[in-house]
Image (cartoon, rainbow over all chains, first blue to last red; front, side, top):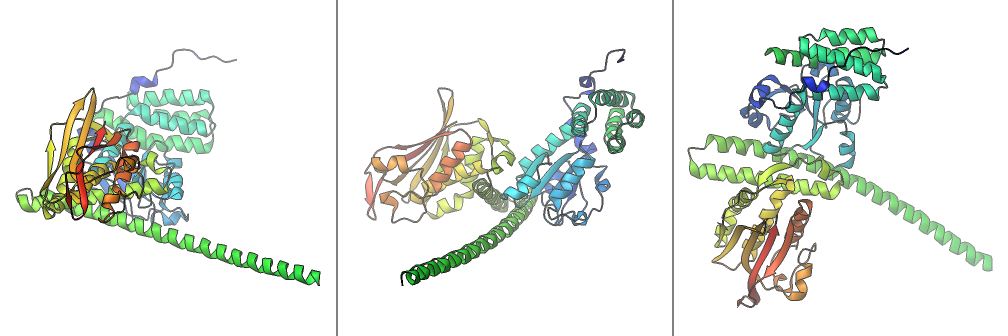
Length: 224
Length: 258
């Protein structure tokens, strides 16, 4: 027997197509992982971006949980993770734990096919000496992406489907997400994940998403 | 007797195979070493280029009230941008995926030519050549980082090949819904048979053989146009205007259609 009553809420109902970029820039924190000082920092701060340099030595991906946008260098970064791909490996790991984040992989080796291939998990690949205009454009694109609840969920939805979560469960989670954003309560989604009986890895993914992304989106809706 | 001869031949061939294998291994090691040097060098150059951009940007911001210093700071800033653009082209040469990674930025064509003019101002002054931008343009295109190379190499070529006291003119106009930019100058005469080869890599006309250059400028310009769907063609005006130092000069233009 298969019974579902009522009409599901449309995801587009929580979409936010036009955002106030000036306000959004003040709210979105951007983390930089690099073993050298981040050269475009001053110029970006002058353009009102909030940039925080975390250095190269993060030990777990949870260190970046509060940052919706992450800029990650390749060489000399994330060595604690033990991969020869260094920062590119870290980008992959962050992507696995936080599929909704906007990731920029940047490197001095944009000429290298191997580095380019290793950075496929990044939303954007950039050169170390990219122009300020290019940085602004990509960061504004990232802010648009992470401040729009619809887009943020679509990233998460894709990750759920890649992890073989049943379509019906994805729909239920999506409804819980919409409710979370509408009612300003991130717990609605995390509780739904716990009650659904999906794989532990998926439950943890959703709980992390609720605690970071949903909490931010809810805070934004409340103006905090 | 016959077997001995065959055996000696086999031995010789075996020795040749061993030698070729050794050569192959040596070349593979050399290629690996060169790649490592290239990787490290490009990485470092990019890092320095980013630093140069950072410092010159700060300097140009903090010297707004001192026009002369500010102009120099701007020139350094723009020149740093040229290093980036040139490296972006190297990326495309070495990495087939580089084009799809590069960030496209909406950019004004006039502004790009004006920027190249500023970078080359001193070189033009040294060679007593003036650069003049004529007409108006508010046309913008989606430009890759390598786009900067196009106005730069066209103006640089104009300056390099012009006799002294000449003008390199860049005109902007709209013709039949297409935005046309024409870079005109006096340059060494180009023979009819040479025109189709002007955009070939390493090509140098017979009249430019004695002048410095590697035949890369117009090749690069053509490549950049290809990446941006811009039509590029040479236009030869009056030939045999005069002769200087054994070189015949003519009216030469490069026309870009956006």
